[in-house]
Length: 435
Ligand code: GDP
Ligand code: GDP
Image (cartoon, rainbow, N blue to C red):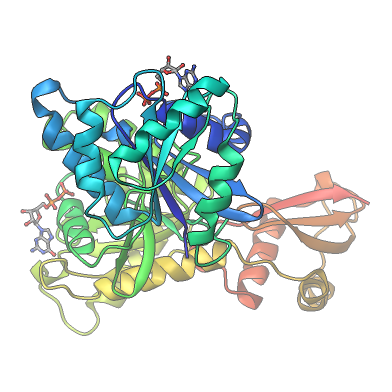
C-alpha cells in the first residue's frame, strides 16, 4: 500500500521548498531523464526504509484572492482524500495569519493525522516562537527549516509511525502504462469514457514521478492501469484538437510514455494507411500492442467474418504478425474486458525474462535442425544465446560471424522464440555478437 504525505498551507510558507527537500535525492536521479520538468507536484521520498509519495497540494491552486476560500477547500479536500498524513506548513517569520486560521478550521475536522510544521525556523529564537502555533488547535508544532533541513528528521520520525507498511519504492511499478491511439473518430473518447467512468484507484493523479504529464491510475474490468494521455484528454474541450499536427504530436508522446498501445481501428473502415503508420511506429519504439477493431456492432457479419478480416489484416501488417486483434464494440460494451485483459497480458509478456538455460534448451535443437544458411560462402555457427535485461525483450546470439546471419534466418529465429515462449503482442529484438 502506498503511503502518501500531503503538504498543505497558504502560499509562501515554504511548501515547495519542503517538497523539494523531502524528494530531493530521488529527483536528482530523475532529472537526468529526458522529458522531465522541474514543475512537479508529486515525488517519492524515503525515510529510514519507509517509502512514501509526497504531494505538494499548493501546486493545484492557481487562483486570485477572491477564490481563495474555495481553493483552500479544494486543496485540503484533495489532501485529505488522498493522503495518509497531512503536513500543515506555517511560517515562523510571519506568525499566524487569517489564512492559516482558515486552513486550520478545515483541518481540525479531518480524521487523518495532521502535523503543524513551523517552517523557516533556522534560528533558535524562531524555533522558540513556533509555540505560538499551538493556538491553531492541531497539536504540537514542529519547528523546521526546509531550507537547511533542520528539524525535518524529528518530524519524519513521527510521520512514518502512521504508515501501514514500508510503502513501495515506486507505487506505480508493475502497472501497465497504456496509450489509446487511433485515427479521429474510431471511438477513442468513447472507450476512455467507459474505462475512466469505472471505479478509480486510491492513488488518483499520483504522477509517475519521472514524467511531466500527470498520470492517472485506473481500475476497470478488474485491471489496474495508467493512461498516458489523460492530460491531453482534459485539454480536449478547450483546444481544437482536430488540428492534425497537434493530435499527431500528442499521440506520439502518449505512445512514447506507454508500455502497451491499444491501437483502435474502425471496423466500418478497415485497416488504413494511417493505422499501419501507427502500428509501424509502435513496433519501432518496441511498444507492446493490442489492436482493437471497434464498432464491430456496425458491421454486417457471419461466423467467418472476424477470421477472414484478421487474416487479411495480418497480411497487410507483415512482418508484424504477432499482435492480438480483438473485434469489439464500445457502444455495446462487447469484449472491452478482453481488450484490457489482453493489454495486461501483453504488458506481462513485455517484461518476461527467459532463463538462459531454458532458452538454449529450446533453440539449440531448432538451430541444429535448420542451421544458418551459408552467406557468401561463409559458414555461420551459433554457439549460444541469452536474453538481456532490457525494457523490451532483446536476445543476443553469440556466433563466429555475426555479420553473415541472413535476414531470413533472423526471422526464423524470432519465429522460433515466439513458438516456444509467449511474446504475443511484443516486438522482439535480436542481436548477433562475435564469440
Ligand atoms: P510555497 O508557496 O508555500 O510553496 O513556498 P516556497 O517553497 O515557494 O517558499 C516561499 C519563500 O520562502 C521562498 O523565498 C523560499 O526561499 C522561502 N523559504 C522556504 N523555506 C524556507 C526556510 O526554511 N527558511 C527560510 N528562511 N526561507 C524559506
Ligand atoms: P475519437 O475521435 O476516436 O475519440 O472517437 P469518438 O469516441 O468521439 O467516437 C466517434 C464516433 O464513433 C461517435 O459518434 C461515437 O458515438 C461512435 N462510436 C464509438 N464507439 C462506437 C461503437 O462501438 N459502435 C458504433 N457503432 N459507434 C461507435
